[in-house]
Image (cartoon, rainbow over all chains, first blue to last red; front, side, top):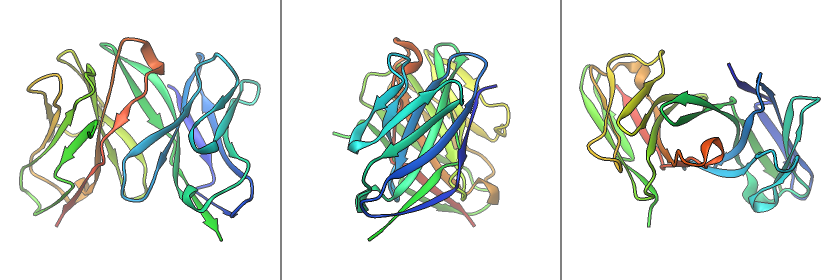
Length: 116
Length: 115
C-alpha cells in the first residue's frame, strides 16, 4: 500500500524565513504526489503536484517541492514565509482504487505557524 | 460560482439520530469522494463513486451510505449516529480521464457534532 509520512506535526518559522515541510513516501510504483493546504475552517486547496515531468515542481503562492527518488522524499519549501502562509499542510499520494477512481491517502498534516 | 458545495456547513445532533449531508459539484466531473477529518486533522477516504460504481473503504461502518441521484451529486447518509462520528466531512470531485494527476477539488466541509 502506498503511504506518506510527514515529519513534524507543527513547524514555526519567523516571517521572512525559509519554510521547509517534510514528506516521505512509501510506494512500490512511481508515486503520484500532491501537497494540499487547508486554511482555518476551510476546505483543501491544491498547492502543487508531482507529474514526473520534472523533479522540481512549482506551485501556487511561491511554494515548490522537489521529488527525490533516492531519498523517497517530496519536501515542500518556500524561500520567505508570509503571515498568510499560516495553515495546515498535507502531503498526499494518489493510488488507483478501481472503477476509474484515484483515492488520495494523506499524511497526518503539518501545522505551519508564522511568527511576526 | 462554487465548484464543490456542501450543506449544511454545521450539523449538531443527538446520538442515535439519522442525518444527511449533501454535496454538489458543478465542474462536470465524473468521480466524487467523501473524506473524514478527525479532531487531530487526520484525513481519511471514506468512499469514491464513479459512473455509478462505489468503492468503499473497508473501515467505514455500514451506518454510512453514499447516495448519488445524478453525476453532480453525492450525498452522505448516516444512520444511528455515534459520538465517534463527530468530525469534519469533506466532499471532493475529480475527472477520471487523464488518470491520477487530475486534481481533486474539495468542498468547504461539514462539521458534524454528535451530542
